[in-house]
Image (cartoon, rainbow over all chains, first blue to last red; front, side):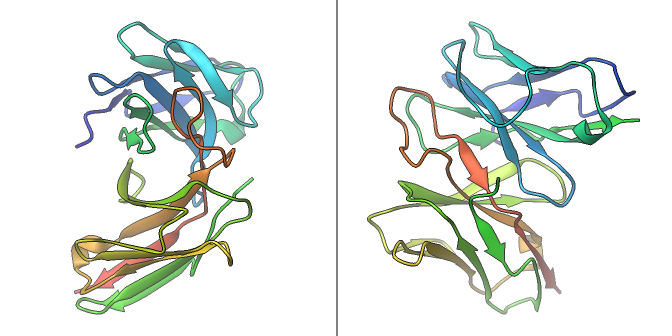
Length: 112
Length: 118
């Protein structure tokens, strides 16, 4: 157990819809990163939030957006869902200035 | 794009045998990390080796790093059925490590799927 929780566990949406995924970090962790993992692939970095500000973004379009709240919980929002957005979405939290990230169990998103 | 590439893609061994997985990467790094993932669940951090280290141990895990060849290996000794999982190497996307707060933006390979048969 890493102390990082994600909700929901599974989600089914249709193309064109919008989705919000949630992540609750470990206490004291002020950085959260989001990753997308397609089936059979390694995770790909979406973006990172540090002290409620975006702190780096991977090669994902603007319809992927995020928020980090003062209690360091976080949201990933995806608009205009596409079939290729079907994946496992992982959040990972880190304490102040750390190399190690602690991953949540993920949210499995299926887009039909 | 994937920075690290693991080899082999899949590995099947008997309980008690050793398992070796390799990872190659493309750019300079500050450190390289290995993670484990059970059956589509979250990733668990196993070990981190810094660019100035050549070998590191943690329990039954041994990691080596060869920065001249841009490669790393993960050895699991005396494997158990519970070691069955996918294993990923990860490096920092920027190669600059943590500069102004936050943490590294990890780039993962495609992973090695290890099956340990009882």
